[in-house]
Structures are given as C-alpha cells and as structure tokens.
Length: 277
Image 1 (tube, rainbow, N blue to C red):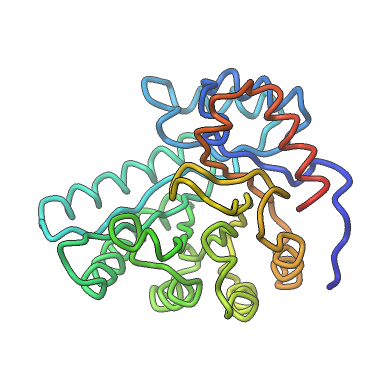
Image 2 (image 1 turned 180 degrees about the horizontal axis):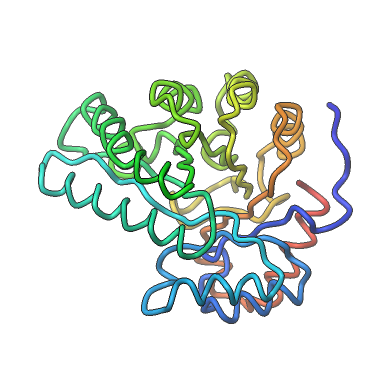
C-alpha cells in the first residue's frame, strides 16, 4: 500500500450537510478559521439566497467549491414526475454554474413500485436528457452508487461497476462517478472498479465517513472516520493509485453529531481526517 500520511488540510473538503445546524455563512467562517480548504454545498443551504453572491462569499473565505449536492432522483412510474425530475436537474446545473463549481453529485433515485431494471433505464434516460445542458454549462455529473439498503427509493445504482458501466455508456467526458466509502466499502470488486474509473478518467469525487457497528439508523447514523469498520487508508490508497488527487470529502449524516456542539465536532473532523483517512 503506497500511501503518504496526511499532514495538512489542503485536500480536506466538508459537506454542508455534515454540519447541518449551521447556515452557510456560519459554515464558511468556521471552515475558514479551522483551515478547511474545500466545501461541497447542499442545495438546501442556497434556498432564498443569491447564488452567485454566495459563491463569491465562499471563495472570499478561501474555500474551493468542490461540488453541488445533489441532482438525480430520475425514476418514477409516473411520467410527470420523471419530467419534473429532469427539470429539477436542469435547475441544479444552472445553480452549479452560478455558484461556481463544475461538479454535481447525482443520487440517482429508484421507485419501489417498479422493477430495478425499469428504474435503471429511467436513470440512464434522465442523465442523457440533461447531459447536453451540463456540457454547455461546463458542469460534470458524478453518478454516486448507494448501498443496496437504499435500492428501494434512493438509488437503483448500487455498485461502482453499475456506475462505471452507466458512465461509459453515456459516452461523455461530463459523465463520471463518485466513490463514497460508506456505500461501497463492502464490495469485493471495489479495488478493481476504482482502478477502472481512474483509468477511464471517470473518478470525479471521493467521499469519506465510517460505518458504525451496530448502525442504529440506515440514513442518519454515519460515523466519524476511525470509529467504525471501513478500511479507510486501504481504500484511499486504491483511489490515489488510480490517479485521483482531488479533494477528500467528509460527508456525515448523523443525528448524534448534529445534536452536539458543532465547533467541537469540526475539531474532531479535522483530527480524525489527519489520523484515520
């Protein structure tokens, strides 16, 4: 394992959802004070705000805007809902352009009233429909596979192989994948598929957290790096051996951590990032 220790925060990005109790102004100021260099912005934090001005504010705090989260949720047995999802993804592309980021993470969606095969076809068709808009805006779309426990409603794309296949079928430099260790650490083909995405220039994003055992909530009980069973250093070595040198994004959904003092939590993120990632 050819892995250099992390000694600074130059590649540390934190998602706004990770520190959910703070508004985006508080996030910008506190990330900057802590030495964090990157931010991924969740769309809910932009509600009611001037998006271009918000982008300038983030950059004025020394933050690189790594991506906008999230687009996707294409599948539905209802045609009107599929059209609405495509419209919303076009809006997300406009928002990313205004914010000043070139990447949107796609949580692709699923509909339990239909087969996974139908949902996957609708995901392909939905992304294909908005790809011209993304290409025109200079925005890339990162397909994020989610853990199979979310295959009912949140994503019918559940392995990195499926995401790689879809990105390749779409045949666009604007279509790639996001690797989130929380969703993919269990996959016996993970190393092979990370290498595949890197070789093909399709590895757009890398997200970290940890899998607690036991996990008490499927969605909102992610662990801080080092308090679970994900082999974080091993996976980072695979990602970096594939050629990826971008930001390492901390994305933690946690009712426990959201209820705690966010300043202390931010300090813990920085510490665990250096020690365990």
